[in-house]
Length: 90
Image 1 (cartoon, helix red, strand yellow):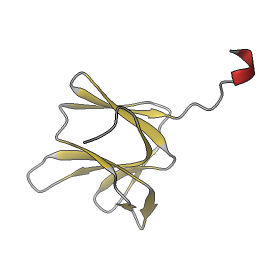
Image 2 (cartoon, helix red, strand yellow):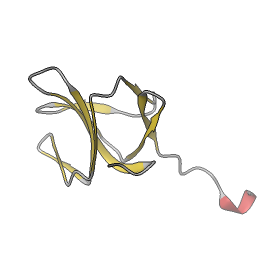
Image 3 (cartoon, one colour):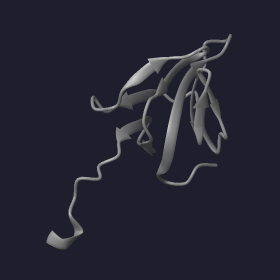
Image 4 (cartoon, one colour):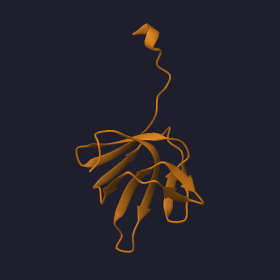
């Protein structure tokens, strides 16, 4: 079970049956995700923020930087982390 918003590196894979999985982990090594702590299996839709860079891996695609992953309706959302906010202005 995933928490509402997971943060980490992401791999998007497809198995032999054609089911897609979005995995959130701690690192990417040799094009494979390690330390998987959250997984979304067979989401109806995956929405990737245009600011998120994906690279090709051995079994699919993976992010090159940590991102946020959360479910919204029937979709798994993958968005870039935004560290530009200045807390002093809040």
